Length: 122
Image 1: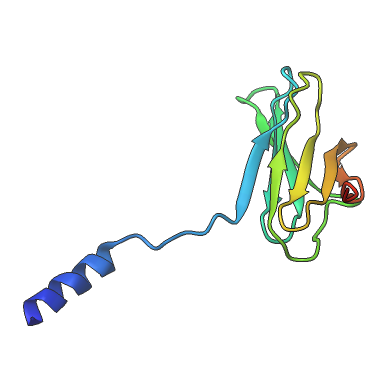
Image 2: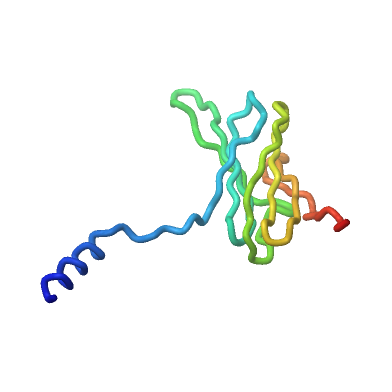
């Protein structure tokens, strides 16, 4: 019994901790845009990053912080959904608990989102 507990404790100590998925990432559907959106799955806060050329280097990562409507929301279960429109630069932020949806995109130097809306019940 002692040996069993020792082996069990050793295995548990060696096992990697279970990691929660704090963020979800999704590429913009626009086929000539290298932008990736990120949403915090609990707070709904949105950011985006993309490649930017820079002379004398391989380039830089350019990131856009949250702007109007893209900041922290009431805690929930958020995710990202892309349209299939090949020229669409934005993505949908969805609240899986309430069904509310916002459209988020980069405007100037920030990610902005429309106010969340839900389709009316039938």
